[in-house]
Length: 283
Image 1 (cartoon, rainbow, N blue to C red):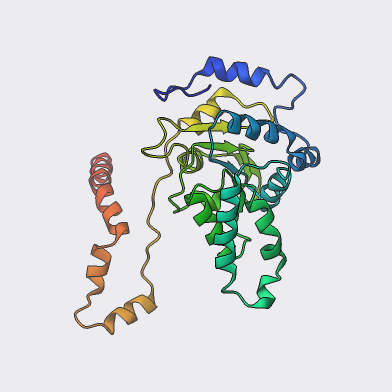
Image 2: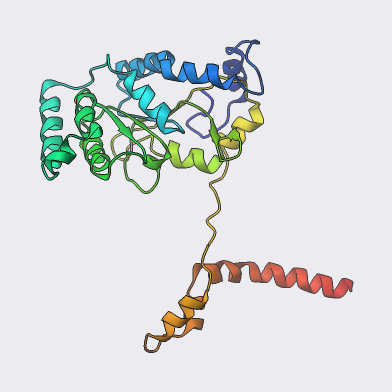
């Protein structure tokens, strides 16, 4: 275990775990096609999920950084059956009541017809490509404790109060639009924070699946890093000023003064003033 209950990074344990990868693993990265094939098979993950269920560490959220991987991993779990007969009936009832509001044509959509089978086994999928109704049903089932294993992209970590007992990362690299990079500290905090249900679990468990060597400093920055800074994107444009004039007693300066951007600038002011005074003295 790499981080203990006192939130200390255990470098010796981390190095011991990395050594298990063997010297044949490229420190830069594996061949992507070979890696993709391994992802689709999902055998290692299946063993891990089986262990989690045996140890009663469920419910578990499995995070992947692509929709294809989420669906591939979920389909590789078809042999698992994680629910009782009563739970299957409740899942079917909730799902049926939800889709009944759809038209006959919409009920025949592939996403609607295929998802119930896997949901009945206690396995769910959550990503941005799902129909809003399906996502809502899956969120309800997870909140009700009927889904034991949920495969998801980062969408499930944003703004949803859906804690689990265990969180698994299938990869610690993500594509940012230009290149594959290590997951940042803020991203890790956001997703791993789902582990540990308040009032139900004494601790949350986070498992990282790594298939390439990682330097201890990279791991420390990821696991012990700080959350991302919250920066304001507020700005004034012409339309906003014109619209504000249509409202009675609305002062544009009041809008600016009450903005989060102005609040952040006010905090910076003492330091900027100090730097300014130093420059004046140097000049």
